[in-house]
Image: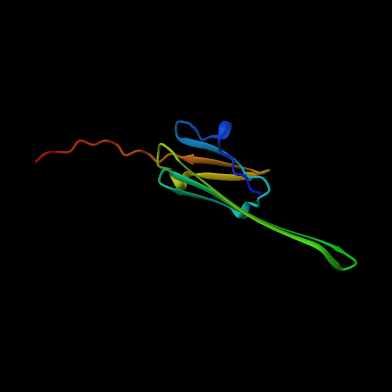
Length: 112
């Protein structure tokens, strides 16, 4: 079973220049986790497969296979600058630092 928990105390926290997100994804290898950013939408997805086989005297007594996939998407208040974004995965916890894209400056137009 795969669990992606980004709610409660691990909900996205906004700082002045970024969002910090911590997602609990235990039992999944780093290479089986994908994080996608599209503007202000962040998607975290993970897949895990497990195979177990029990043998006695060279004969298979039982064989178990399981596969699970999960995806969680959330929208933030600002577009994300993917060039300044960081992701780390350690001990079952995915830590994201999602840098806010610099907002465009208001500009006065000259009327002709």
